[in-house]
Length: 68
Image 1 (cartoon, rainbow, N blue to C red):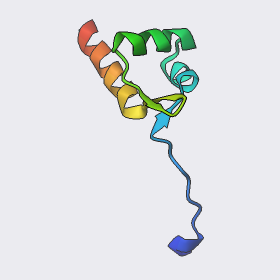
Image 2: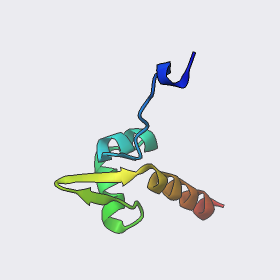
Image 3: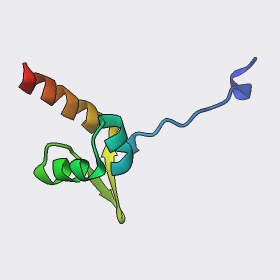
Image 4: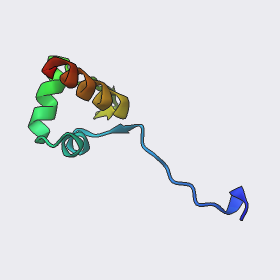
């Protein structure tokens, strides 16, 4: 099989707040509180608020350091 025949899967680099909430195991309102407080980085694209997956990783890493 050649590379041209392989199925390409798009991997998102960012998610919406509801998807971030599911990834973090919290409610959507909590994600908005975290964004407003600056603990969870987000960007605005038009009317949409997007959270880079890297920001979720950073948030989780920061919480691990805080807990230790």
